[in-house]
Structure formats: C-alpha cells, structure tokens
Length: 179
Image 1 (cartoon, rainbow, N blue to C red):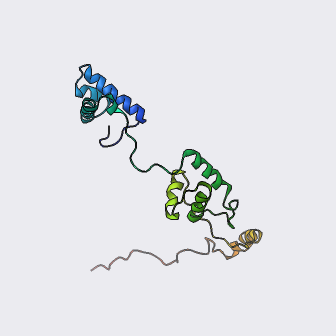
Image 2 (cartoon, rainbow, N blue to C red):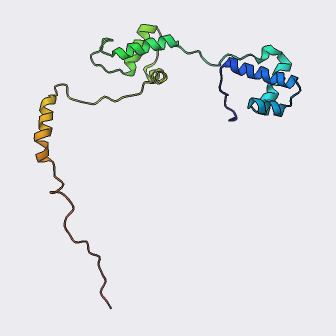
C-alpha cells in the first residue's frame, strides 16, 4: 500500500473494511495481523480502533467529501456533451468553432450556471474534451485549383534530389609533409 494515499473503494466498502478491522481486533487478533489481513498500515488499524472506542460503530461511517459540491450533475454533463456535439453553428454562432467564452455562454443559457471563460477548460477536461487548434485557411480557397497546381506546377519548381546536393569539393585528409 502507498502511504498517504486514499485506498480504492467506495465509501461503503471502506466502512466495511474498518468494521472488519474492529471485528478482528475484538476477536483477539493483533494490530499487525489485522493490518496484514486488510492490506493496510498498522497506524490505520490503531486509528480505527481508537475511533471505535471513542464513538462506537457510528464513528466508523464515511465522512462527507470535503469541499464544494460539483456544479454539474452527470445528467447535465451528458446534456452539455450533446449540445457541444451539435456544433457551434447549431448554437447560433457564425463559425463551427467552440471557444471557452462560447461554451461559458452555452452553459449559462442552458443550465443557469455561470463560469468564467478561463475556468471552462476544467469542465471540458472532465468531459475528456481536449484543446484543438483549427487550421487557418482562406475562406475563398479553391481546392480544385490548389490540387491541380500541386500536381502539375509544383514538381517543376521543387528542387529534385539530382540537381541539389553538397558541392563536389574533395574532402581528402591533409597529410603533413615529412620532415
């Protein structure tokens, strides 16, 4: 077990682990054997026993997670994903590009939750959306003309491997004259 890290499991599973430790201790097991059985540290087993002695079985219950509760529920996150997947054009924007300020406005409009645009990226990361940089291209680009130019003009302009290379200067090793 890694020290200082919360073990895996739901709060209910961790409570069951603490209750099992207390039951093993009451059955006469040592702190060391209980810790080995439950794959925990001895100090945790001692702490659980002290907690049980001071507060009884109620004291072994899980404590609420500290900190501010999340603003979005899982169903709201799924709805946000559906809105984002429709595209920015469907949301009324002139380009199909999602920016953080646009997403912040979308969240406020549909969920009534205000986010500073600089913090929207946290929501996007929780949805496993990553930052993408769009390619910059001219709006009046003619793809057909570009393809034709690449196929017929560019090969004539491009330096061929035969015509370009290092100069043909001899690179003989200099041998100093004999004395």
